[in-house]
Image (cartoon, rainbow over all chains, first blue to last red; front, side, top):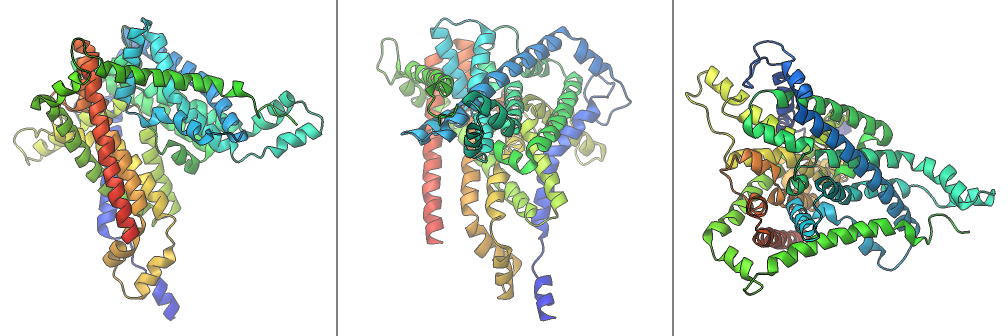
Length: 275
Length: 275
């Protein structure tokens, strides 16, 4: 009896933490909900609540040449950045996890530098470097910069995955007669497949979302975030709400996809210092 | 045996090449800030710190970053605390809401805040509708708007470090405190909070440095009225091709930001040791 009373009496959650949590979640969720509702508002000034239902802003978003081109550029750029940085990041992760050498810790830390340095400094540094070097190809410059900033994410995700895999399974494959290439492709690769997939998704999103670095390097045709930015500056109709709704839907699908591959706990670990 | 992954420097070579590219960009940035045609090497810095107009950019940036850090810390701590005390389902829901932030495109996230808080936004229209105000209240295009936008973006960075510390504090500690007669508030401030200080420290450092370096949020939610150092550097570089001066501003603010964070961490460590 006395034991039961004691456990029941553990103080509950106070009102203040509950209210603050609610306010925080509202600050994150409410704007997104409003965007989705505004996207079907027929009136040309984005006002809430909408006076009816219309899909004209979706039509406008999909038929505007600037947005279609920007979307294509962003997808192409993010795909290339994701493939290249995941390949390089996987190789680097394999190297640092499987080898012990002097300066290993320093190397791992240095490869995480792009996350730690403010993006304005990176953008300005790349702008100065590329202009001094006479490199004027806007998309190539943006692509290189995107690969640099997505590499830490790709490498980190694969490293976390690889640390759970023992090198002895490769040795076992070797004992059973497999060559180094066979044992890597048939044994190691399948085990870190989920890490590689997550690295691809992460780096795709980091590149697709990037605004700051790109804003410093863009010369002519911009990526989707750049086009959205210039549209917001001059127009106030809900076209951007329509685009945002599509992007929110894609993010939700992406999160559910990663959760299936990695699990939500690992996801929050990998994203912890990022964004 | 010789695995495919041990002792092969070729694996790490591409990552090292990207690291070299990053270091080149940073060296270009530093070089540009100290190369002054026909003047001493510190010319850009002297010009920057010699004029109150320029110093004000850094002052404003620090103020906005400090407000953001305090708000994000209070809401973030409450959220992390609530997460350790609710059902698994509620916790997963909160984690998904926070993770969604990492995956949403920053420019559209900022746009959604304009829809919520702008002069024609949901909040103002609601307040006008119920007659609480006569004219729209200015919630964005000022420092308040930038802070709200930054808290929205940085909240996940504030929650996760605190949550990972809080979830490791055994519940029996709180039970013991309570059994010995401590009230909820006292248990929190004397037991839980001091033990969670390392997580608080990590949150503060991440959120402060993130806010200090943020670019897209002040650019869009400041509306040209809140001149932060990141926007200054961008405008000097892009509009005036004044790379050296832009670099000096960015480097000065980052150095001061790192110094502030270093001082804060040292103070906190002393606090943790004496606690």
